[in-house]
Image (cartoon, rainbow, N blue to C red; front, side):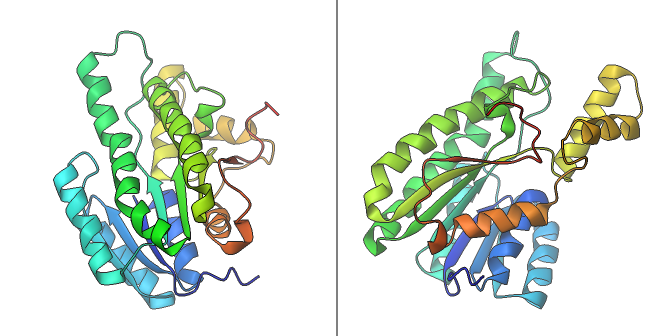
Length: 261
């Protein structure tokens, strides 16, 4: 299927590896000019080189979402090189494993400023151009934990749930401008983050990391972890004109892991 997004422009956050990279590669394969923004320059450079070797043009900028000055500078640099942005993929890292009781106020505040507020601000930066062109796609990566909270990542459960309310409300505000707003909810995808959670589970249950990972895979109805490539394919479809009637939705990409209907 031709997704009809060749020639579009995109900014993908956290795209130097993992899920973000899977999305960036899927968009680039469809002819989208992609700007990736992540924290580590070396990783960015390798990712950009590999994408350019196989697909459309790609550029990259190092910035930390928790440092708004550097992040805003990177976004503006991407706009200067690519022009108005058609597709924004919000993808922030997760906080360390924890519960929610006893978390210090300064930790809540720091994590909100690192993984939530920057997504709101960058979206507001890019919306005027999307509205003027009567076309835009805003995709935000969260976690299936916004539907089924995961005890080991209480801070993430809480803050990502706030993003759900924002995303749904935004979809109501911009739908008539030709802009769709959706959230992608990964289950267990084979990334560094899933390895980190397996390590935390192993320590908590006094088992090996390999056994923790195996138990996780066995709990998934399809019997395995997902891949960044599979995740990217769904994101690319949602960014296309074929998905113009999908907005305000939570799209699960979890191999059936979440048991609720």
